[in-house]
Image (cartoon, rainbow, N blue to C red; front, side, top):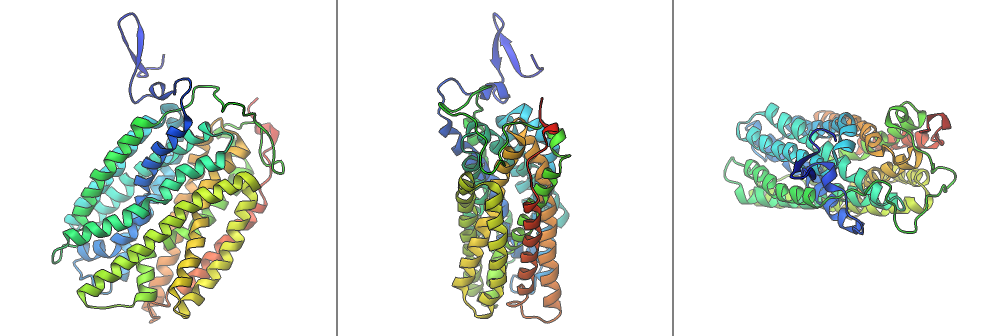
Length: 469
């Protein structure tokens, strides 16, 4: 018996520890549809990172002792590193701890995720209070990012095992929750900041503390509810099949072999380019919409109204980010992962090329519609990749393989925001009006999608020498 996996009580009767994997194995007859709500609860909490843009201006104003009405472009670029570091650590922690997550099970993983993520929110609040950017970067970015990585892969790996008959839909359900994090997080944060705001205090500190408490309840509830299937379990009447152009394998590949294959690195590039093209836009969504369509004002009431509209735009994108994860991944069960990624890349590049036109014609409705479809495919890419990995490498160690692959997300968290922020800041410094400063970045994002398209076209079935014998 592995050390720490259980204790004994009288007559050698095993009593599994509540957090251990053994305690989460579902009994005979367990309904697998009880698991998705637990996964979604955890993912919607850590998905708050997608609503971070509503904190950009308040944090920048407080930390650097500047008014909200001032020019905060340079300061926001520094605060944005909290967002980037969090996503970098998400990918790195998922890669480093992927095998441990598979061994330990989802309950223990989600609890540790809660400690890191909500602890990161509290450290971030302290950093704002002390006007310490390094503490915000360490707390929200480093510590919170580790929590995000652990909380991200555990539910995905669990649902893939519960739904081998519909892996795209299964991963879409879990990752849909992550994409919907800003749907709750953005308006909630804005409402709380408005409530706590007083003079130079933007309310960001109190807001982060309250959100940590709220998210604690949901993450711990998800940890208590989650279950894993018993060894060898399959859905009644289901038989594995190989289909959709030979891209679904009946064999499995261990993680240490999978990441040495060209297929792994092509898929790494596919995810990296898809994420890079969307992540910068999401990170600046609130500011972007305000700058491009709402202008600037020194009137306090107008500033609050503008911020609320910006937060609403970020929340709307979250709806499509969330919905796209379920819809596009479910579509991939029908037409295949490779084909659906082809749609992401080709259609996405065209839509990015149309965004500058929407700004130049001052058509906010057209801009929102184009951005919503783009972000739906960005979200769909996240939800489709675990199923793509299962198709190529089997379900044996898919959680650990997924953990290593989403280091592509870590790289994208640097590439996307860095390209967008640097180009935007340089254009503003050169005298380009804020409303037009983002336009050049949209063409660049379309170029990244073209690189992803080439990588996707190069994906082929894994050579049999890598299969588990």
